[in-house]
Image (cartoon, rainbow, N blue to C red):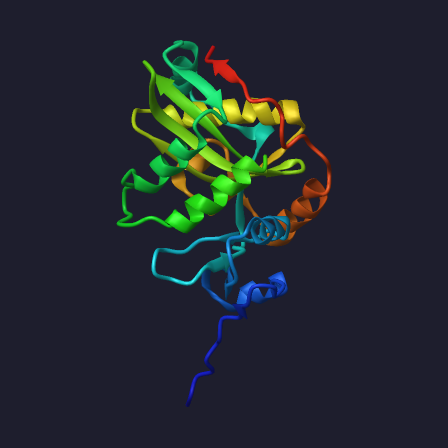
Length: 238
């Protein structure tokens, strides 16, 4: 018996995304391929609960997994050891002071169990453009003037879409995340999209929710206004 072949929908430059329900047809929430990483396309993707993830040499692949890993900011879990680290005054944390350094570090620092990176030069260029437009933000953790950890993501309305984080010393990325959560609370942002379930985000309080529930959050929160261009500031850790 011949098996039916599922063809991944291909996007030309101005094609709309397929209905999210089509992601059920493919493993891990793969929805479609192609298109571009233009700011318009990326913002449209996030506003529909879709994100790009692919490796160098592949076409752009667009995903909407079910379930979706999220962190409600009021559910952030700070372990006793992380709290001691936060109270030590060892680190300085800044926001939007070294976006390109953070994204390059996320792309180049080796990760356990991974041989490559999805943060291609085209992705770096695309998210740097979103940063200059006031949508993409970074938090940087410094130790003795050296960048030792950080994270970046995209904020649309009242929802933050986390993209990646890195650490060169223990807990540096977690410290950046705590400061991100503190900032999001002041911005009235209740939710961080963590995309896929990992032990790292789970340890910080993130949990999976059904895609339909996540999409309801996306529709509501991305349409509500928040200040994407709040003043850049340095935050001394305390």
